[in-house]
Image 1 (cartoon, one colour):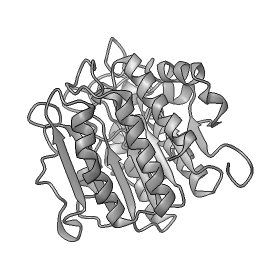
Image 2 (cartoon, rainbow, N blue to C red):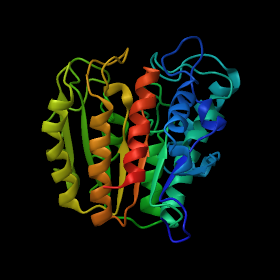
Image 3 (cartoon, rainbow, N blue to C red):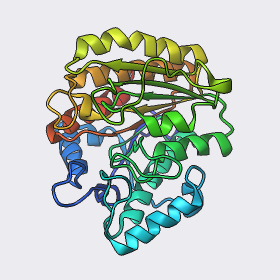
Length: 320
């Protein structure tokens, strides 16, 4: 329980983030949110968390990470309601600026609840848009809510050691390269080998640059890898994060790494996500006053989304 007697874990959910999804049969459709929420309710975890409403991020908040010219570009495409925001994966639709800003705002709501002490752990299902760069969209990601959260933790809260762990099937390139020379961000990412899957990055020899050399850990897995391979790789991630004693832990837990995803080729089960979440909760309890924030990330098999994300919430609720 928190100091005010409420649940330790908050979940930010609602229509504002549910509508971040692309039309016409796009894999990242607007039904992903409800697939998760139905499962959370079916397992009774909606009664064991604080449910918080999203809000819209301000332009100033977006520009803690994103270039102003890029924000202008998204606003224009959103008004036109047509065209592409990147090379082909991320189409514009009317209102995409507002929907993407709501995702960023939802992640900030969870972060603010944790930093204020109203919660120790948080989860945002439609969030973790880890491909967007400071000046471009990519891979279904318009604004990088994780990047905004990191910059806000650094600038407004003075944190100097932030851990980012990513187990989505796709490499978290938008976070990796935005902070690859920043020793305030400790990065660890297990993903399908980039020789076989978008975005083609995240090789094991990518370890950070400059003052942050050695702060990045990339562990590519071969297509078809399942829980056994993931659990064999996991201790290196945990040791890497533990070594830096983070003050806040961010966890992108994309469900596209589960078997049966229509885009990726890994074969994890939701128990891999539960294991990672539980171990990170314990690490956050040791070093970060319990502060951990999970982002749903990718995942295009609705049953997998429901199972994996609910399993992460269960680990947050039940603790280490």
